[in-house]
Image (cartoon, rainbow, N blue to C red; front, side, top):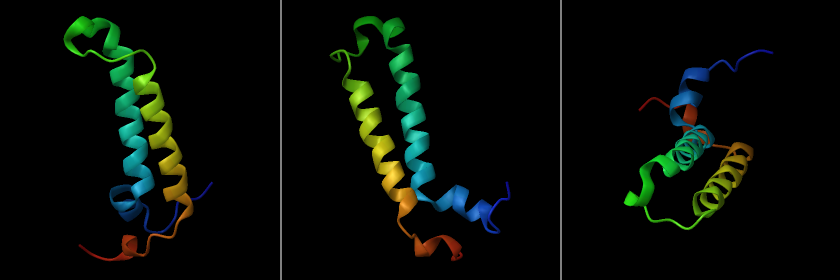
Amino acid sequence: MRLVDNWRAVLTRAWSVRLMLLAGLLTGLEAALPFLGELVPLAPGVLAAITAIVVMAALIARLLAQSNIGEKP
């Protein structure tokens, strides 16, 4: 396995990475939901459905060319 040459830029600017981080946060929130009790009134499965949508969006973003990744901010 070999990293792409501009892996730092990809890590900080790619939408697929951002969306996967969001999916990870949503998964963590879903795991913490039983401990939060009634502070967060969500129906069962809502966070799982949102996470699935975010993961699908990340897959699509991974397949799309993102031309601005190699540019300097």
